[in-house]
Image 1 (cartoon, rainbow, N blue to C red):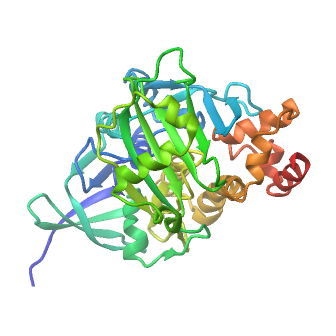
Image 2: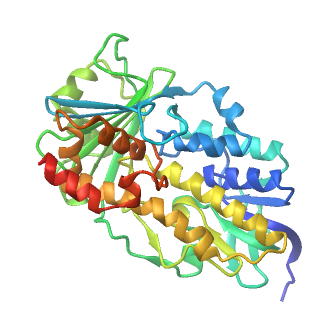
Length: 411
């Protein structure tokens, strides 16, 4: 039996995406040794391109804000919604919660590389094209990793943080996965040259979420970038999408053309990039942390893209986990369930209630209400801006009762 070469690391992070890079930077700022194992090379394509203002706090904490600001991404100050002739828009600067009211809409390949490069600059070691093949957790965590040539080696660590995203490395290897509470949904999406005139019916400082003119649970995203391009996608249950013929691009364009507003808005668009699909993306796990490990971001739980909560949840998990990890590594006793999982899930559950209400239709009645009380609108705006952990907001601290009551009034 061949003995594997063995290395030592204080913290190993699997995945160099946003949660992994931010966790690495936060731990490096506390003086810890961090090794990041990343299966792919950067830049690489990913969705989740419309950030929420809450993320800016974590980028600032991690020392990455300057890197992001100077990258030249599309400025974002809110979200707009459309359904037929109904329109509404939320300006994130006019919200209930304190904190950032603006952020960016980003090409994730470039954004993720900006964060990873910043983490490296702070002293984190990132090994690209290295793949985790096995893992052991408990009092002596370790991983078996294969390098670019397929040669295996072992890394012994004091703590493993899984930031592997949709790959869901530790949930798969440790049998932690369980079915999501959400129905299976599927997305078709691509990037286009949108050619929307500067004076056209579109605010590039806002993501647009459009509801299908006939089906309230089918929706589109339009995320503009700073270079005149746009991410566009449609989300529906697979059985609905199977009614359409053709490949992903044909189906996506057919569905976009079913909305007269989008058909007019994108009349001059150049569809120059093959469409992609993602199916059954919602995920859940039996636990977010255990002896020797914790799950960050999408590796732990992913809800739905409708409110762009993915990166916000990922960076919140990175901040909470890095704080717990630092205390544990410096000799404190940490209750990872009480100090990490419970606080993280509090905000996730707020987002979940809003997602469920969106597909059920009650939240659409709320946002399209013609005359909402300004204070309530500011509270809802705070959730849409990512402040799902602000317990001062009744729509966080008293969820879902408040949301249900408001939906009945608006109906």
